[in-house]
Image 1 (cartoon, rainbow, N blue to C red):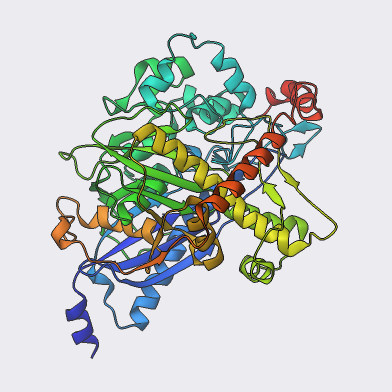
Image 2 (cartoon, rainbow, N blue to C red; image 1 turned 30 degrees about the horizontal axis):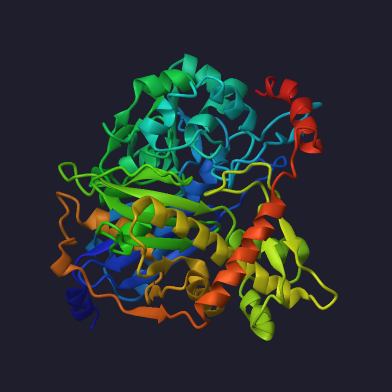
Length: 569
């Protein structure tokens, strides 16, 4: 029986999906795109100070090994031979910044997250011996706000008539991207400064840290990244597809610490055993796919044509629209980014991207901060009880507004409250907020591309919430289309890995791509009602702006901590 099963399955491809709140390893059948097994491990986020978000790179790496080992065990229980796994792809949270010692393999600081929005920073950290000191051995995550003062100082050096940073990178100067976090680490963390001086430091986003570690680490690990992750650092020229000398000089980043930039689909190196973590189930399997999570979802949704777009609903929402071989520069606050490059000799594709800072995070906030739900799943039940927000609007600008506003002075508000309002209405308003924010991005995208979308392809954990999906169709007033297999991010990484030259077990030719069954949500309200609700939302957004001023307690805290920052070791 087992032998027959193995014969039917044929080549398999694994995918590491490393996100802000969890790590997963998933295994797909390369011929049918069927998900065979997976394992997930939650990872901790550390908030040493308000506005600071960090993660432990060693915990992230350990979680990857654990997920691989546990998934292989599960495959064994299903009588599936793990020697059928022919390649591994990596998809990762982008922008999160790690610096480590290439001689010891030890991180020199926590992974520093990219900020959920470009709002003002309040640098706070674990206090030790009367000074403000960050925990050792962590990474800078994509949600972190500590670098606002760094951004303000850098922006003074950009000539008003020549924003060479944006023209080369497609990105606005913001706390969100890796270069600014790396600059902060070089300015404030003595261990990082010393390692750079002694030529021991390596920089990377999470993909680089994982690939270097999984391919041997100090014993010959491959220090590389792919074009999609590189395009989110603000050090990468998206036209020449190389690290840019002028940008590195502007941010004062030594180029020798940067990883080699490769395509999203080629063999980077082979998996090695980790003796310390007693992990080696897939030793010798090539790691041959690498995509930032949003690019991976674009590939997994098979948005290979100009004008196709997808929205991923996770901690935040990320809406990407494939613009083909041309860079489209936004007039409406969107980012221009590399979508993918599926092979060394294959052409590069670009995308316009808009981010909703707070999506799933607002549900977590209702659970953890307000306590009105015990689990994230409960929100659908509460929203269903009332079926309306009853005029209540929730703008979750917890640390500012992202695209299309880029307004760091905004803060979260709940407005339109009456004595009748209860927790069900607030829950409904929270779901609506995710949909309204998505509509704002989509409107901006339509104006930039000039092609209105006929439908929106969706994925991510929140898409299992049917009320949210129906609300999204109503508020956009176009159909929302959801694949029955929701793991599109991991699927995209697996497709890139399986299609790599030298692996060749996954065809990306249109005629060979498996047909995916879809669930479709059609608008169920009239256009006029949709517009009225949207215009009221915009009124609420305007009310959220201008809360943080130069004289606010937050900015006073920034000044208070500035002197301490320089003493961090």
